[in-house]
Length: 388
Image (cartoon, rainbow, N blue to C red; front, side, top):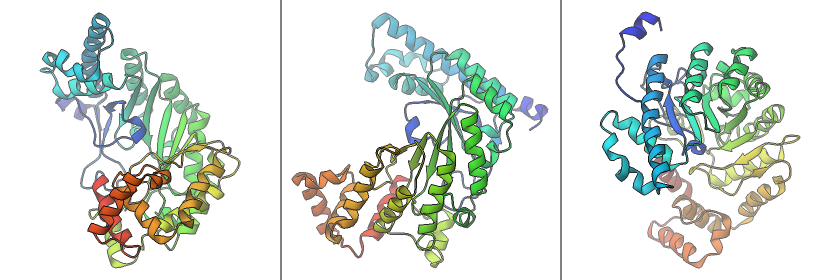
C-alpha cells in the first residue's frame, strides 16, 4: 500500500479482529493487519469472504495511544484506591468511555486480566514491512513498558522470507512469542487442505523464530488428514516437530462447519472425517513418535476431547499417552458417555467419569437423544460446530 493511499484513509477508531489464541485470552489485542493474506485453507472458517489489508502504521499507533490513555487512568485510579476488583472497573471508570468505547472496553478487559501481555492481530502480522512492525513494537513498549509478553500469529511461509537480522530486531523491540498454525507436518495433508506451506518451510520458519530468541508455539490439528491420511499425518507431523523443538505444541481438533470448503468434500465423501476414537488413536501415534524434544504440549481448546493431555516432554510423555490408552481400552458405551459429557462440559477429564452426579447428567442426555456408539460422532459433530 503506497503512502499516498495511507494518507487519505481516515482514522475511524480503535479496532479489534475476530480471533486470538486461547492462551491470549487476557491479552490486550492490537490490530495491525485485517484478515488473512492467504485465506485459502479449506478447513478454516475465519476471514472467508473478507479482504486482507495492512493498517497504516499511524492508525495502529493511534490505537495504542488511545487505549494507553484509558489504561493510565485505570492505573492511577488503582493507585488511589488500592487493588480494584474487576467487577468494579466499569462502574468506576464508565465516564471515560465517550472518546472511543471500543478502546475503553479493551482497556477494561486488559486491566481485569492483569495487563501483562499483548497480542498483535490478525492472522499474519509479520507480513508487514519489518521496519513498520518494529516501529509498532517500539511504540507499544514505550507506552506499556511493564508487559511480559508481546505475541503474534504468523505464517511459516512469511517467516521463512524474513531475514534473521530483522527477526532479531523484532525480538529486541519486544516481540517474544510467535504462534504458527503448522496444522500438519505431512506434505500430503498440507497440500490436501491448501495450507500454502510444506514441511520444509515449517521447519525453516520454526528454526528461524527460535534462532531469533523468540518463544515458538506450534498448533497441530488432529484429524486433518481424514481417515485416509491419519497415520501419515500423525507420524510426519511428529517428525517435523522433532526437527523444530518448539516451546509449545498446542492441539486443536478438526471440526468442519458448513461454511468451509472442506465441508463440501466431507459431504461428497472425498474427505472421510475421523471418529473421536480414531482421532484418539491418531494422537497416541503422534505422541509415540515425538522424540528428542523438550516441548510443552497443551490441549487448551474447547474442541479437544482430552484436556488432560498437558505436560512437558520427555518426562510427561508416558502420563499423556496413558490418558489415550485408557480411553481406547474402554467399552464403546463408556467411550460414548465420555464423549457426550466432555462435549457438553460435564466432564473435564476421564477421572470425571467416576463422579456419580456428572455421569448421571451425561447419561440423561444420552437417553433423551438416544445416542449410541453408532451415532455418537454425528451428534458430536453438530455440537462442535457451536464452538467454532
